Image (cartoon, rainbow over all chains, first blue to last red; front, side, top):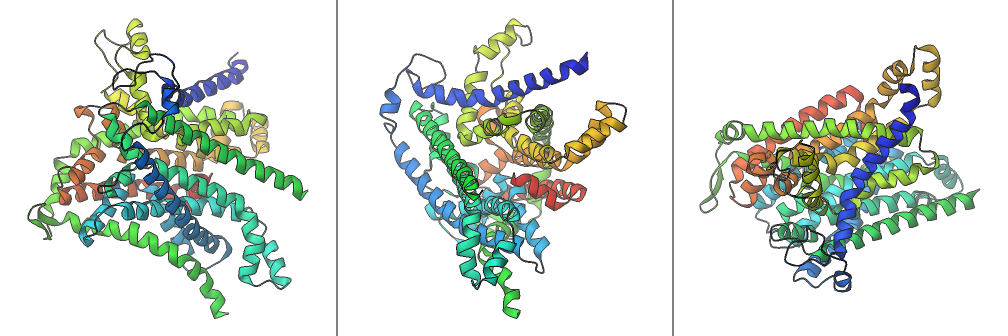
Length: 264
Length: 285
């Protein structure tokens, strides 16, 4: 009896958990259409497209999002370069200190964000550095590197190293083989790593709060707004970011699929 | 040949320098800051002031224990909630697998603070959930969910659930189905096969998932701030307010360092149990 019920029960449980994961996301999206009166946006009061028509109609909101986008751009570019180089060394080379490097690169992922943020602020205070846009960007590059390394390393490990050797045999020097063979093959991994860094950077609140100084990023704006009620325009922008990330992810998957078909 | 041997170090240098400068050095600086005395007005100076650690572990013992308790509870709940789901996606989902994985990751693409604010909406007094629980008699007539321990643990469980589910899925998905079939042929039943084959093989994923849930949960202060009250203050809240509001840097740094040591001890124990590689691999998926 239990044996027979196991399959449906498992499916039912999974559906319930997915619903649990989905409901808060749905609420965020739904309340971007709420015709709320007063400051708070907690109770459904009717449908409106007004907030979608004027998503930046709140002081400081637009500039804070621009700041976050700027920081994310630096975080993506910086961590992609630094992280990919580390991944290449870890996967393609055998060297003294390789295991230690592996552990070290993994460590920021195993450190609570509040510690990363607080200790970095401690450094900046000790050094007499004024916190602001630059210190936010430094912090974001730092915590994105580890994510890039694990993502790109996974892709490199799935790639046939003989392809690079073949290129070398055919007369390509290191940089040329990298540019013509390795780079195109790991491109989907780079895209995924870049997207991941972007999503993590634009969403980061804790580390940013410690190192922002007077600067206001999008999550800092939201946190400040939670005390007086988050304006529905924030829901609009968060929904837009969600849609943007989904489109980017599907585009990456589609390109990958088309390529693997072309390879055959 | 000697030049070839230098290649990996040249590749590592810029990234490792960044991590050393902005991750490792700050951790060391934290110890330096924690041993200072003074005030924000007069300035701080280094004085081997160990009393900050005494303050950290005696005065804030309650907050430390609370953080461990909340994070531990959230981790166990997340494991129990996510394991059947990960199992279903790995073994039963068929062609729906990628869509289901996307749905699991979906919350991560929605702003963390806004997801937590959504929980305020869900758990609010006189909301649907509270009304239902009151009607069922599970909650007193003046009982509430918002600003309680339950709400904070629920928020932590929810917010870090994808970090539990995804590594679980990655390790389950890699299990050779033939092994499980062979086990069901040899052992008494499915329960024994699950316990003796599936579970041990899924262990790296279970550990990775538990670490990736426990570590951020133990240091979190967002859930306690937005869903809790003054009675649910976690150690993250204390570090945050001491650094950013009260500017008592030495004690804040001591608290943060004790938290680091605690988490590090747990991570090292886990690494010993399953090895670094399988952990970082599981985390990469």
